[in-house]
Length: 93
Image (cartoon, rainbow, N blue to C red; front, top):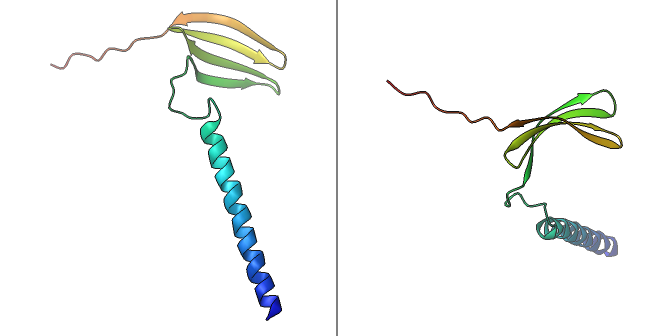
């Protein structure tokens, strides 16, 4: 009977440790700034295209403009700039 109580205690402690780990991860995500999706961001990545092993082209929206940037291992370069396109709905006849 001593072995049964040992395994029961082991399972209870394991469940307690797992619960504490899940709870601490949930709390860290809630407290960590920038992790919650509720706030509005100043920069939005519209699209990204990989170029080779370390390079990437990205379209970023910032301050009512769209920027085409080249991102590599140690460098970020602005390649082009354009206004954000506005779409209008055609009139219903």
